[in-house]
Structures are given as C-alpha cells and as structure tokens.
Image 1: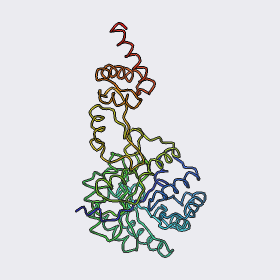
Image 2 (image 1 turned 90 degrees about the vertical axis):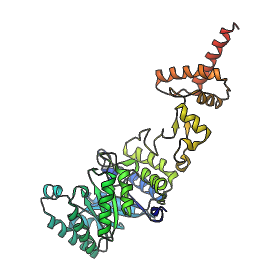
Image 3 (image 1 turned 180 degrees about the vertical axis):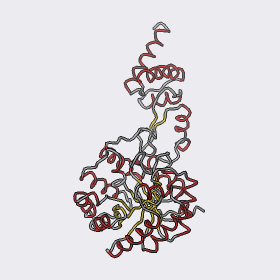
Image 4 (image 1 turned 90 degrees about the horizontal axis):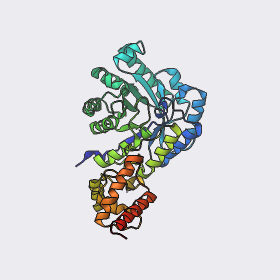
Length: 385
C-alpha cells in the first residue's frame, strides 16, 4: 500500500514572493491580483504573497490580496527581526513566515553573528509574533549547508517557542534526493511541527528533492508557477502536482486542467516565455514525430503517453518530419482527406524530409497538398500520360 496516498500534502505556492524575486521580474499590481485569483480558483491551498518590509506600497498590495477573500491561506515573508515582524503582522495574512540563516557560512559572513544568537533570535521573535496574534512559520535559510546537529537545535527552539511550521530551504539548490530524504527524515524525527520543503533548481533537482522530502515526512511544499525564482528557480507547481499524483497517488486539490492557463498568465506577467519542451506545460510536450512513436500512439496512446494530456485540458498531436515513417505520412494525409497507397507514402516522405531540413518546421496542410500534386504529376509523366 502506498502510504503517501493517505497523507495530506499542502502546496504553498510562492510565485508572488519568490517567483517575483526572479532577476528582472516585477509583477504589476493587477497582475499579482490576477495570479492570486487564478491560483485560488485552481484550488491551490496556500500562497506566499509578498514581503511587507519592502514598504507601504507592498503592504497595500498584500492587503489587497488578503482582501480578495480567497479560500487559500495567505503567508507573508519576513526576516527574523522586530521591524519585519511588525510590518508583516499588520498585513492581516494568515501566516507570518520568519526566515533566518542557519548555515555557519551565512551566520558568520552574512549576519556577523554566531549560533547562540540565532537560537535566541528564533525563540524571541516567534514568541513575540505569537503575542501579536500571528501564526508563525520559521524558515531555515541555507538549511542544506547547515550543521545537522545545530539545525535540530534550531528546530527544537522554534517548536518550544510556538511556531506552527518549519521551512527547510535548499537555498542554493545543492541537495540530491537521497540526501534530502535523510535530512528531512532527521528533522521529522526531532520535532512534531509541520515541515515545508523549499527547493531550488540550480542542479535541476528541485522537483526530485521536493518529492524526496515528501517521502521523508514533509507536510508542505513550496512551488512556483513555471519554476520561477532566484537563479535557476524553484520547484514548478505543475511538475510537483502532477508528479505527486502519478508517482505517489497524492492529490493536492489542484485542478490540473487549469495549469496551462495559469502557466500562460505567469509567463506573460513575468516576461519569461515557457520553453516548448518544458514538462507539463510546454507547447510541444504532447507532440509526436518519430515513426515508431506515432505508430504506437495511433494503436494505443498509452504506448507513448505516461498520462492522459486531457488531465491538463490538452490533447496530443502528431507532426510530420525527418523522423516520421510511412504510417505517420498516411495518417497525416488521411487527416486532410487523402488516402495514400503505400508507395505514395514513401515518395511523399522524402519530400517532407527535404522540407523540414530546409525550413526547420513541419509541413502545413498546403505544403502536404503541394507535395501530393507534385508527386502525382511525376507519376503521370512516368507512365506517359
């Protein structure tokens, strides 16, 4: 029995916070409101919506998002200091997330502090946040490079002070799934708090590390639409949701048929187009050309599709190209009302391959008709008609 399927895994989408921290990305106010509405309508249960310490304009926008009356719980991000905390509390979000470095390199070279100062800061600010009536999540920045024993001490300090959640941040994206599993399992054994995995994609492992964290006991996962985020980005919402469903039988409550539309919305707002081959939401990921693949697909889609694209409101399509076979050519011509003989398919395939090599694009309907007329004319000439 897959025990993961019986657990609740909560998506905390941070497109509006960490996604907007992508270099060069700045959402307009209405864009942030539209993205928040779209995520909420899709069933995303939590979203991190901004950084109050950025100033009054950001606070006003955060309050506007909170004021939308979303079903999703809202979170705001703050550093582990009193000024950030009070600004965050003033926004009215459901959760205040307080972040603090826990690796020695960042404690010493970024903060100019020591481990004892970090533990004291966690204890004081979490307690203070609670006296202000807030639910507090504690973020461990650069947790993946922290001393393991110190990280557990920090986690226990957060729990004793009354935090509701810990966020394990692989800030530089340096973990692999095996190490992620070990680290989260250690944390899970040490505290009773919810644990959120926040994975970055510097080595292309953000989704894999997120899944490993879930297997080890994480209850929440950070995502961003299209994988936006600092440097190489974060674990993509669309990948995590679909991978949890198909690999582990876990439903996150997200309407997957809305994911392509949300992807397009965020791509436009961020000015970051989605690559054609981007998993789940890329324009070409359900497009088939190879002769072997098309033949198998036409016989039964499950031969070459791991899941039905209809789950995403999409469908597969075939294109004719350099790697097509005669079966695909006959099928392509059937789609435009022409039934080919086997010999005809071979002749036309040569023309299709020449076209693709010259133009770097598959033939359109008019191209196929032209190829057919040219091939037919040659055939008539050969028999002297």
